[in-house]
Length: 349
Image 1 (cartoon, rainbow, N blue to C red):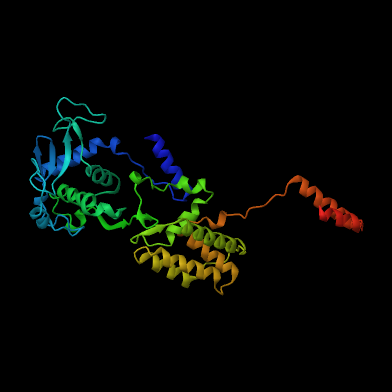
Image 2 (image 1 turned 30 degrees about the horizontal axis):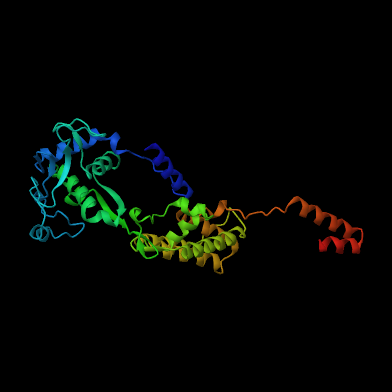
């Protein structure tokens, strides 16, 4: 686990993503998960079966509102045996270890030895570090119908005995932002098909990781981005042009960013995080008629969000081989001595 965590953090830093203030592990928060389940059960939103403790989704009239689930339709069309589950949408809060078995990861609980359900860890850790209600919750589009729907249900159930908390504030988060899948050559990437893109795949081919970051900035998070090597080449070229243009601008600490462009950039970010439009404003700043020092100040402000490390980039300095340098110096010396024939001979070499 430590190896994977280190690799994950290394990739984040290569992409110029800041480290989180808290990086918590589910296995370090079993006590919090057990306490969360106990609150849900005490409020009457859970029931026990022979294989675990389950959440009773029938207790929530608006269960599935995030995904606009047709719960009645799902029940009517059910074609699977539920076992001891009461409803198709009910889900496990705690699963018991089967008799005679021992799992690699299992813990004691008030209900028996076992392990947490899939969803409870997120609700419990979010509550511990962010509180009962916070502003933004992110995740992939596949989390909408089940995982995030169940996170909301768990929190609503835990807070059900707090009538002073407004109902909207029992839904864990104010905004739910779901990123759509990254496609590769118009197909969903899948490890099973051997088509899983890694950052190392890019750096092994000589790409700057920030070229991939630039490519991501060109697509809205709620639109599927199609990865191709041609698209990455185009992003790398655009990033290089932006870096070259920024590097040529004079720096004047006394000059402020252009207020009009800053306002437009902020409006685009506030419009459902529309980074493609914000990136277009950055190009407008670079190519427009503003004084050069204002251009630099404006782009520096924008890069706090874009994260392309424009201010730290330096053009590559090509160093000629020693033999070539010696030849050039000898030719210069011959020219200074007006030894034109020798200078011509050295140039021919």
